[in-house]
Image 1 (cartoon, rainbow, N blue to C red):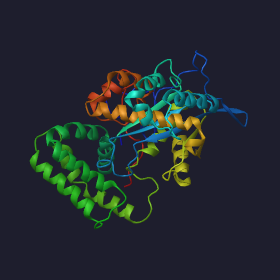
Image 2: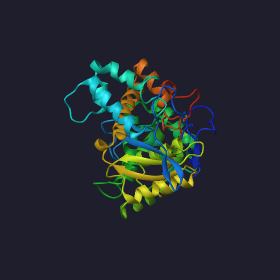
Image 3: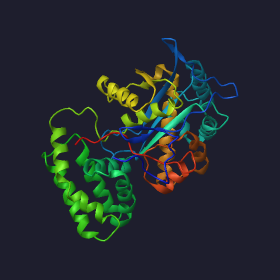
Image 4: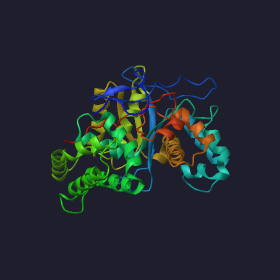
Length: 376
């Protein structure tokens, strides 16, 4: 796989290398000067550990091309429990909904626009204390498929993603994405070889129809890589898969650990409970982050409604997913996009150039690959 995806040259001061791949973002800002309290370092063996709370939005399992959302967002918040509880209470007081549990949709309603802008604003409660890692799902599928089948996948995935859409047309592009998604997903309700057959039939059809285009060479190489695809399908059919290739949550958590541990800090992540985060996968996250040089000191699961920091992360994840999806689909809100921009991880997994130019948090920010190796 590649060291980097995206636009311009990667800034090596932002992020770290994991298994040969650059992940993570720039270091966080220091404590605010307006009196808002940051998370208290937790003393572990006499060493301060920064505790950061996380949640996600946009999970559709392995159905990344036909699900309900086209963007996955993983948000993290660095605040004390007391400060977070006060901010959640203030949000409730401003919105005044009778709902027992508030979600991002409450803030995204037009009648609560002022509350949304206050939450994200530079003078708001989470600015400088929060972070969002974005994944464009369609690009993630292409990136994973190319990484599985080709050796030098770096520029190939980005070229195929951008030029393929233009060369194939919208309908054929959707068919190709669906075939790639089906090739990679663990679950298969049909015949064992059906995902492989369908993918390579589509690749061969596109080769014939689009010879001489910027993607013809990539299609030729994909067509010759069937043995790798067969080996992958045999592997996932043989038993449970520890790290599903198509799940963006796990690499997003590793990237989050890399971001917050910038500057040599030790970080403990507190995450909303979900079925994907089994003890075995948590162990993989911890080991992968540590091998990459991230200072991940621990990882624990909590019930979101019992931790106000996770509730704020849930708000931010849902808000960021909606704003990023609107930009991706050409219906962005310039004001909300500008408010979100400081939170966005430069190491987000994003292939669409126009929307990334509007979302990126630093000039020349470069989205990168997912940092999870394909099974071969």
